[in-house]
Length: 314
Image 1 (tube, rainbow, N blue to C red):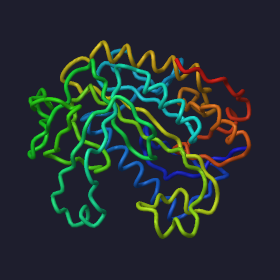
Image 2 (cartoon, rainbow, N blue to C red; image 1 turned 30 degrees about the horizontal axis):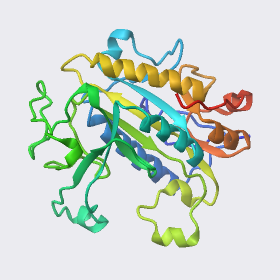
Image 3 (cartoon, rainbow, N blue to C red; image 1 turned 90 degrees about the vertical axis):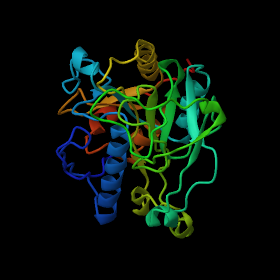
Image 4 (tube, one colour; image 1 turned 135 degrees about the vertical axis):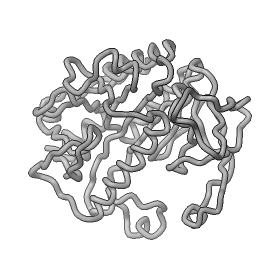
């Protein structure tokens, strides 16, 4: 039976307080949780300047805000996926004419240059499809929602409606003028309803001795010597200076339907409104007893009762 690893106790919707008896936390794992929550918050803040609640897909969700609140903040989907499931998700996104991937269009800065703050400005571009996605943070562009903003060095305004000029031709590429908190993804400011944040974690095996000295950055989740499946997530924040684009709201609702057809809903018995989706291959691993990281929520009972679904492309 799968067991949850212990997360740091933090008063947050993203990191609820839960001390699971099978937790195996240590200093390295605590650092991993802290880093992941920081990067997650930074990525969310690139679109949500005043996030206090997030919608979690599910019926009768006690953490789900009202319909009026949903119009002010955003939506989120948490899920488990391994490398096999990721292919299904990427195929779904590749087949969607409304979605583009924002990818690097030039050399990435070295860790040393980031630490020294050399002022590296990354070049990015939009592409219609992606052969694969590395574990970590990614930005999707919902094209019908409108242009992506080109933020100046002074950064976006959080005191009024967005006024930054649009990126003229994202497909041709552009050089960022202002880097966000996470250099792995472009920064579009707090009022960008066209950008969707994807955090993907498909690895579960611990690092080998060679990988511990060659992989950069090392993610402490996989330095513990045991397999652990970490939850991934999709988040869409549309700012509070305007209502969300109806076309993106429709797209998100269709994505939720697709998720419910291709993954199984897992929830914590204490608060059934907190939902994680598990794709088939990941669910097999969880049902086989693999440890998981679900931001402290206990999903053991749901995993035990789950039946593995058959995936559908659309």
